[in-house]
Length: 428
Ligand SMILES: *Cc1c(COP(=O)(O)O)cnc(C)c1O
Image 1 (cartoon, rainbow, N blue to C red):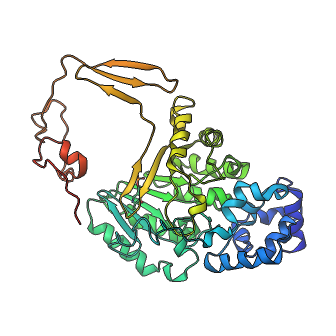
Image 2 (image 1 turned 90 degrees about the vertical axis):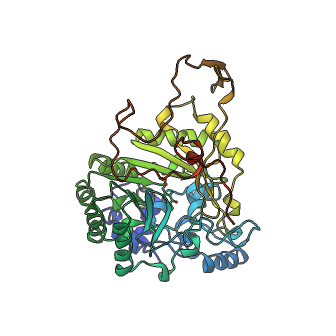
Image 3 (image 1 turned 60 degrees about the vertical axis):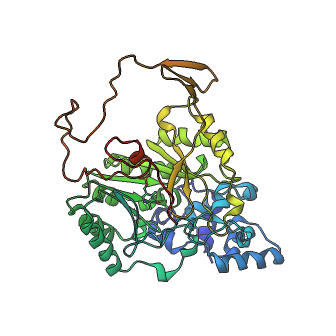
């Protein structure tokens, strides 16, 4: 149970730096040591009460999917209207999580199926997802890896991480490593730096990325020291996970500024969530605030088919409506790509409104965001070259190295001139 001083701190509002105890409020270790895990603590902090029946079902929900909320993230909740609060909905259990929908899957993205080594998911030709941590500062209720949350058995051991690194070393085609989890920033600095150092030493790795929600739920984790340590990697990108403009606080801004000033490009991946951000106006506000913080909106994900997420799912039409409300209506670089991560491990599939209306050999008919229908005339003399991969004959002068091999897959294979394939047949 929280001590009176901390409670007072919550009640007086987090902006009041004169409150006793403020110095440790900004200490991320203090935040982690004081995460809120029970319904009783929530009642006490928000000054609310649930009836016994509701409490019982909430407990059943927590038995299946545990709760962990940082004091900082909980302090963003408006206790006067907590039931409609987008922060509360992302952090506090909903009894509907126990409902299993016919469409639900245990591992919708087939991450375990596509795993050739511990912690590694290798789905795309040139990049891998590398789970290096199983803990998070806050357990998102909409987590796609909900099945693993809080499960100690999934905590990658030192040896498991080493095996993952070995896999990357052996696979020269892998040029992009995505550290994920859990949250890689839950590792101690030294451990994280050690992993990044080891990956940096691999010749064929060109890019490293970290996916973290700490700037949202535990911004104090981004200490000056951590940012300084990360600044030495000149190929590191960070993606974070803001879902609602309310999460873009001054604390979050400080965290992001430290990363950006360390030379790290920061992107954002949101999840489209019913009653949290399924609104064109909220999403527009979100992406506009993100770019104000110098965070580039990267993806909006359609909510996955994981168990217990049905009540968060929107129809895809909502996502398309949101994309329609962004393109043209706000800065181009504030517009993320809306994707559906294909169930069964198909990867991310972008979906968007149609802008191409029709075309002939001479003209393309397009429409813009205002509904203006326009004509683009094709060039008369564009030379339709056939590529035979002989770059020494091509006037574009690309010097291909050994790794740029000719192994094309998918639709690119059907389109290219140097492969005879004319149909793709679904296997199995
Ligand atoms: C999302 C994802 C990636 C990265 O995809 P990008 O589109 O390059 O950001 C890589 N591997 C897996 C398994 C993923 O789910």
